[in-house]
Figure 1 (cartoon, helix red, strand yellow):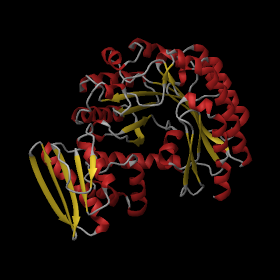
Figure 2 (tube, one colour):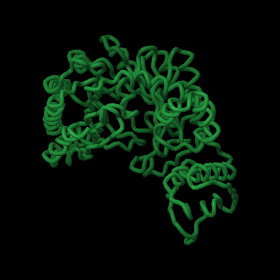
Figure 3 (tube, helix red, strand yellow):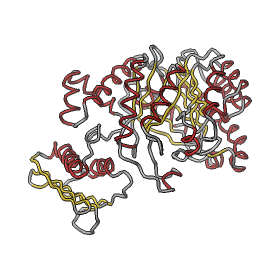
Length: 479
């Protein structure tokens, strides 16, 4: 697809919005009338007039509107939405809003304009459907409670475990299948380096008088770690950080086939309060199709086993829009999940990233009508079962430009999920692919320190990463 950008600098938003309608297209941005394609969108701002025209396989539609340059970006986005909706017959629920954090924008508008005007801006100016605007508003209110509980002398810790039992076909994370000899060989060295980085990060936090408010083991599949490795890393955290203000400790076990008694006992020993056991689907044909090397029965067994231990909260993940699934397949999975009564349920919309196997194999991102039905059912069923939405985010190339939503039973919100998405507390990231996100006490200044992506890079470049971590203290000295 060719996207022509003439007389303005809003190419980023224009490209994102075109991708909502054509998520698998490679979009070439050009700033003149050169080139030719069977799918073209032309955007122009000239003499106070915004014009958008599209020629898609011979279907042509053009619209224009007057606007000063300050409001031209939104006007052009609105015209793109109208033109492409007119050609395709598809009206994405989030309108022209393509950002990752719609609840963050809603929270800001609610604070400055009030709830009613914020809602009306979403629906009238951003063309967001009313049910999505209500969702953003509900989430914003729930997130505000967590944000207000953030301690100014605290940080959170993210521990990256980029290994999995096998690689799911939709996955784009930097994670290695532990079944491969190279990954299995890397794991011991990786844990050794990770332990060392945890200790180094703890020194910086101690020098600054910062206490841990939450810990989150993510992946990959942290459950791939043996009980011994879990004990090693959790002990290193306890020895390195002040944990007297700890409000939440999460270990995302992930795959049910990684859950075992010795690991659960280790987690309880180290005061882990929240775990995740993630089925993604309760349909065996779907699990087989996406490369999840476990059975549906394994999910029930892992969950039942975990319930024998005094965890405060168990989260379960589902994905809407998985290949081959109809709305009734997703509804079946959701009903099974609700019947288990986990404290948290996270409903993701399928996102097909460039590096996923599914993308390499030519799987297309289908339009969002089916996924929208799935999310609508989830909203009603979870609400009727006593759950409420408390955090939300979106990813690029999500089916239907839809959202991921965390749902919780009363008083069971995840602290880390909210502060990570709303960028209101420093998160120290350790491990391959982890990012340290530094937030000053006012949250008006955010800086990032990146670790190497891949485990082998992380190990070979470890000393350089320790040097980068010194930036934590430099940041606070300037704040």
